[in-house]
Image 1: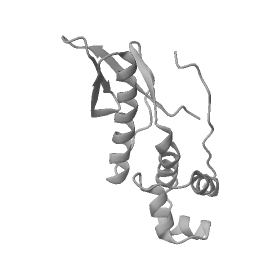
Image 2: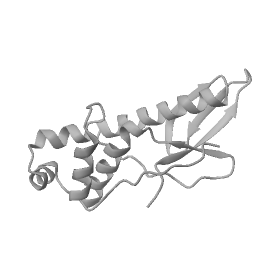
Image 3: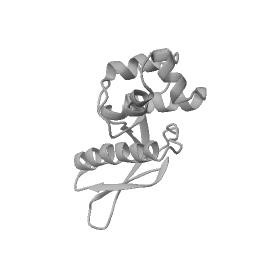
Image 4: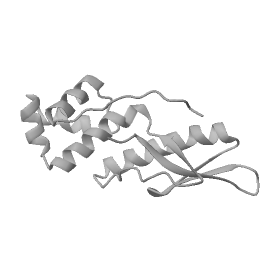
Length: 144
């Protein structure tokens, strides 16, 4: 079990803005005028980076360990379930057709579940994860 959050480096630039980078996504960068705005932008940037990887059917790395000087940035809720399903399908090595058979749905339904740009009901994603022996567990934590 692991947390759906990635480490990020928050540094101030010469204009006193916070610049954010992600060790697990080397091309993902964003910024904010203050710490709160930088975190909001970081969450959005992280979600977009994950969505691009999924849309390209490329690897989405699992979060690396948090190191000194880094902060955790949570994966946006809108993509957590899809990411969990994406990882499960790839780890198990199951085809979309086979998953569709297990769920008794058309393959297009499974494709939409894995499409980061398609709005899918979380109950469908949860059912697909359960069919693969997986589940997402939600947690509640201090934001500090």
